[in-house]
Image (tube, rainbow, N blue to C red; front, side, top):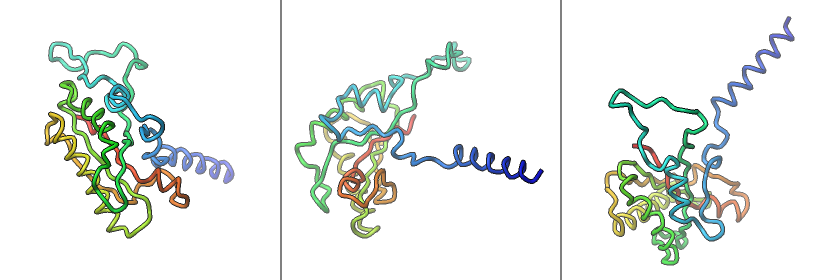
Length: 192
């Protein structure tokens, strides 16, 4: 009997760990636009607004329309790592990345996306102090936010910037390649 209880306890703990403890949620569904030629406006729209940014249909104000099939439900929005870089210890966006930010700006300025709250996240690698990385990541996110607001008709209240410093790595900081992946600016659709 004790063996059966032990096996049951392990099974419950295993299920609990799979459902309660995320498996590095920051890297699971991340769309990385830094690789290759980057992302087009269509790529960004499909990732950040997988349902097209439209509200679910309602039945004459009586609540949501019944779903025909569960499989037709759009995927959840995924965070996007932007193709944008800065000089070391700087929050000035390098001009060669303006075109990539313009693709994002085109998407966020579309009327069907106007009601969504978008968060710009700054992330760093583990080199340097925690406080310095926190400040730098926030400044970089603010720079991207400022660029988008200056060049596109986006509601200021719907765009926020936050710095996470080195607290949310998506790769090991033990290698130059890993540190490069961790230095990123992400865009996240927080919903309406």
